[in-house]
Length: 301
Image (tube, rainbow, N blue to C red; front, side):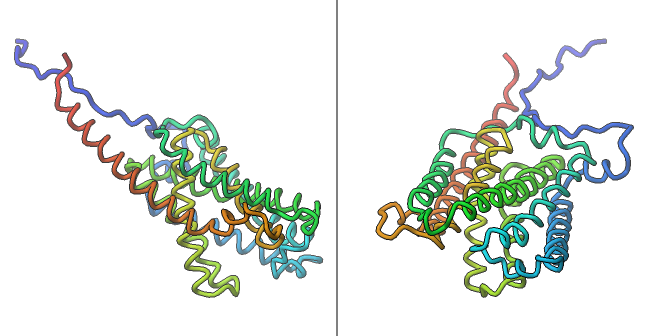
């Protein structure tokens, strides 16, 4: 007998990035496919350890000892001491992604999208980097150093964004976390990685603390750029252009250029922009969640 009082179908929010499982997966793939915040922390810690080990080994090779101090004014020292270990770290991350079958999900179109207000964060980053480029004294820096920094920046952008906006985001989504938690985890792990500079450099507690706060704000902007564009390559390129321009400008500024104000204020600008956008994002996501919950209670017409 058919029940004439069956419940009507209801609208539900479908996760556009479901976890794909296959009986052909090996234990390594099944382990990472479960995702989770602690796996994200584990992988970030492993990457950081591998990177530090690579730096130590490279700096003890012939010619590498001169780069141990990370002399950013010497193209060869910059290439050996900074770019090479980061490039090798990026290769390790790509190998990891390939081993678990995530290259397509990471570098392909992302299912998430964000509203146009995210362009504010992207615009601030682009404006700072462009101003630093225009206010840079190319004659003082030299073409070799500029080219080496651009290459180093590409390595930095690839490695750090692949880890924090790529693999970390993928791990969090596969565990079913909401986008607010994913945004905080992505930016938080990114900032935590830079806290290690307190032990690997002589920059001091205050400078390291400021760097951690800056990288958290920058990480929020990069995550939102991923949400807006749906492509990991966008935060990679934004990040790749940031470190070279800011660091080159700090060492080789053109005196008296009115555009030098933006890169000089890059830290408070990024912190304020990232913090403001995070607040807007949290409010926006909660509104979307409330609207979806209300729609789920409405029967189909």
